[in-house]
Length: 613
Image 1 (tube, rainbow, N blue to C red):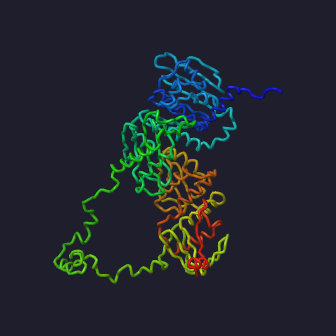
Image 2: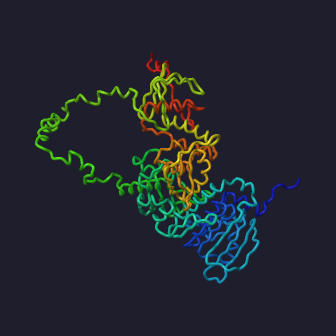
Image 3: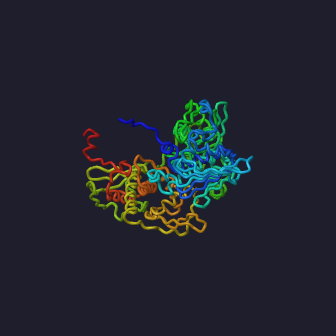
C-alpha cells in the first residue's frame, strides 16, 4: 500500500495560510497601511477600485527597500522586526510576523515598486500565485508603492463569499480610520474609484478625531490625560450629550494599535454611570501606552485582541482616568446669576412692590408660619390642594390628538372583538399608567399593553409589507433637508437607498454629491427627519443578532425600533385605542420581532387567585 501523507505545494500552503490573514479586502488594507507606517512614512495614500476586489494600492514616502529586500518581503515569515523569540514580547511596530505580503501574494496579483533615498533606481517586483514572475530595476519615487489586483482570483469560492461593494467598502473605511486615528502626525488619503473619500492632513489627535468623526465633535470632546510609572492614558471622551443608543464612536488603542476589548469598554461605561442613560453608550478615543512586555499582541491573527499581564490594573486606570476627566470637565451646570430677559419682564420683577402688597404678604398665614421658628409644618391645607384629585389619576382622560398615526372617532364605543390569533374580549375603557403601559379593561379582566413594544410590532409589520409587497407612501418635505454624514455613513446610506425608498424615504444627491432628504415616511415627525436617518444608520451599523438577517430584514427591524413610541410619552384616549386596535390587527400581535411580549392578559379567575378568593 502506498503512503498517503505528503507535503502540500507551496502555493496551496500559502493560500491556506492566507485565509487567516486576508479574509476580505479590508484585511489587506490593514496590513499594507501598517507596513507603510512601519516604514516611517509621513504621507500614505490608499486607492481602491471596486471595493478592493479589483485594486488595492498603498503609496508611501517611507524608507523603501533594496532589491534583495523587495524580493524577500514576499517569503513567508520574512521580517525585519524580530530575530529571536524574546523580540516577540517587546514589539512596538505594527506588522512583525512576516505573513502579510506572503498571504497577499498568494491570493492576488501583486506589483511592488520601491526605492531607498540612497539608490538611483528603484526595484519593480511582480508576484502572482506566490511566484515572482518579474524583477527589474525601474524609475521610482522614494518610498514604496504596492498594488494588489483581482483579490481571490485563484480562490473563486472565497471571492463568492465577499459581500456587496458597499459592505466591503465600509470594512475598508473602518480599517483606514483605525490606522489614521492612531497616527495623526501622518497625512492619510483614501480614494475610491477615482473619488477622494478622506483627505486627512497631519495634525493633533483632536484635529484627526474631528476630521474623521465630524465637526460636531469639536466642542464636545473632553481631554483625558493620566501619566503614571506603569502606563499612560491619553485621548478624548465625548461629553455625556454625545452618548448614543448604539455602540458608535468607540476606539481603544494600545501602543498605537487598535484593539477590541469588552473588558475595557466596561471600565469606561462604569465611569459614566449616572451621567448617561443605562441603555446609552459613551463616545471615546483613548490611547494606552505601556511597556510591551506587559501585553501579548500575538494571540489573534488580526492582532485586534491582545492579552494584558494584569487586566485589573488596566481596568482601574482606565476607569479612574475617565472619571477624573469628567470631574475636570465639571458635569454640574455652572450657576448663571444674570437674570434672563424673560424673567426680567415678569410682573414680580418689573413692577414695584407697593405698601399694600407688602401688608397683604405679611398678613398671610403662609408668611406667618415661615416667619416663626420651626413652624413651617403648620402650613394650612388649601381647598385647592391637588391631593384631593388623586382619584382622577385612574379616570380616562378626555383629551384629543394623535401620535404615531393612531386615532379613533368613538373610543368608548369601540367594539373590537378579536385579533387574528386569539379572541380579544370587548374593551370598555383605557387607562394610561406611568406613560408606559396601556390598561385596556374588559368584562372579564384587563390587558396590560406596553406601548413601545406594541408599536414596534405594528410598525414592523407595516414596514415589512412595504419592502416586500407594496411601497409605503412618501410625505414630501417642504424644503430639502441636507445630511452631513461621515464618509463611512454615506457609503452605507448609498447601499440602503433602494430599500429606504420602499419604506417611504426619498433621498437624493445634490450637485455637490451630498445627500438631501426630499421626502419621508408619513409617520416621521416633521423636524425630526435628519435625526431619524442618523439614528437609523447607527442602529443598522451596530445591529446585533445571533441570526444572519438579510439587509431588508435588518432595515425593517431597525426602523420599527427607532420609530416606535417610546416610554415616557403621554397618549390620549384615541391614541391608546388606535394603538391597541392596530396591534390586534397584526399577524403576530403578542410578541415583538425580537420575541418580547407586547401585552399581558389578566383574567378574572387569575385576579381572584391573587387575592385568595
